[in-house]
Length: 48
Image (cartoon, rainbow, N blue to C red):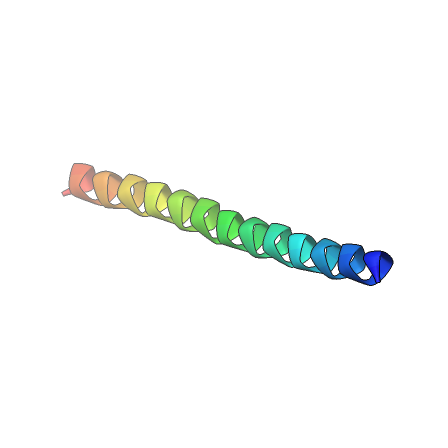
């Protein structure tokens, strides 16, 4: 019984870690795209 509970908690912890990693990856990607977008807009305004 203890082994089963430990395995279950391990699966839950692994799922939470994967979810946090995915959220972090999406957040970083959005930040990078946002910075690139701001850079492109400032370059565009500088040309005009």
